[in-house]
Amino acid sequence: MKKIIVVTGGAGFVGSNLIQLLLKKSNHKIISLDNYSSGTKKNHISNRRVKYFKGDTKKINLILGKLKKEIHTIFHFGEFARIYQSFVKFNQCYESNSIGTKEVFKFCLDNKIKLIYSATSASLGNRGEDSNLSPYAFTKSKNLELLENLKKWFGFKYEVIYFYNVYGPRQICIGDMATVIGIFENNYKKNKPLPVVRPGSQTRRFTHISDTIEICYHAWKKNKCRHYSISNKKSFSILEVAKMFKTKIMFLPKRKGERYASALTNLSFSNKVYKKYGRIYLKDYINSFIKSQNK
Image (cartoon, rainbow, N blue to C red; front, side):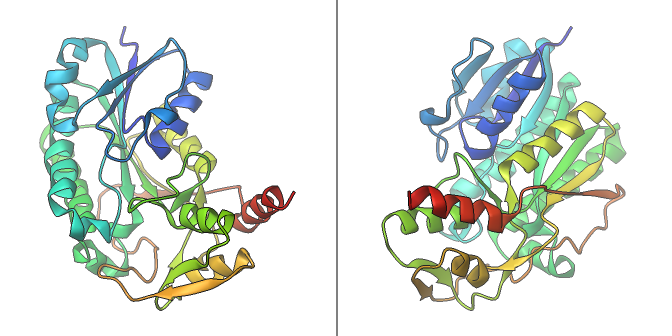
């Protein structure tokens, strides 16, 4: 019986939260495979059922090959996951999202391992034009095309989860890989203005990490070979979100690759996308954060 679940990016924001949920809801042993480019040992979950491996996904067969007969599922969340930074760190983005991910797909296909893949709304917005908006969006959209072809060619089975601007515990708050909400929280704590990239009217469907990982778990348990999206029903502009913190704001120049909406509009895949909506409301989360800081 296959008893191991692998989470790539298991020392990162989403991966570490998922591991915590899997420990609670399953009896499987869990392996994290992470290169620690954005993950951190601070996110390690102390549990004898979890083992942490340091390495790149492009070497997954070398690292986990001896365990291939015991692996039930791979949650592939260990990719380069920032739009603007993919211009600056193109080689890192390409190696992770193209070379590394193809090795993960091949490892799953060759060894009949179930795959759960984290997609992004960034690659399918604006009637498909956003797929070429940045190296990040391009690599993610091409990976979806590859999965579709692997299904047609070899009957490869997988689940896809489309993420929308995830926020919450263990989010990255400083550095070039920080999330919007993470940056806002960090600056609020330091009494610094919240940076808003112009024009500020670009909208996002911010989704709490708890809602996101619950859908990942749901997809794994249902095992229906489906595409799911998990988002909040309401979109907010970046400027609207900054104003929720009721503090100073500063504007930054427009950036390459900036998206103006985050809706999925280029759904040319054979799989229907099952839309799921989060229960945690962004305004409530921010109000709770502000109260915790003003005690």
